[in-house]
Amino acid sequence: MVELVEVAPGKWRVKRAVLAPPRSDLPTPMVISDTMDPVEQVDGNFYTSKSAFRAVGRSLGLTEVGNEKIPAKPKGQGAFTPAAKAARRAALQKAISKVRT
Image (cartoon, rainbow, N blue to C red; front, side):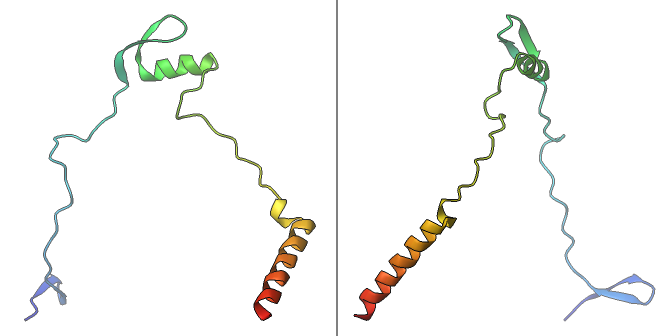
């Protein structure tokens, strides 16, 4: 039997199990820290801040591996040239003639 619940005066809905929103067992959400162990940059200084380390690297013209922007390759037009079209058409006609004979 369907159990109904009154949600407002004169308005009834089917009673459903209330699902609790997903929560972590951790007391706080995970935060990515800006601190790190002292690391030497090419300028000879040691840095404990990730953002400062990256800023110095960028100012010296270095590229951080994994964050570089790779330029898009230009699209080739080899398959759309008139010679390629004619070669495809000839190959198809040859294949069709072999099948028919």
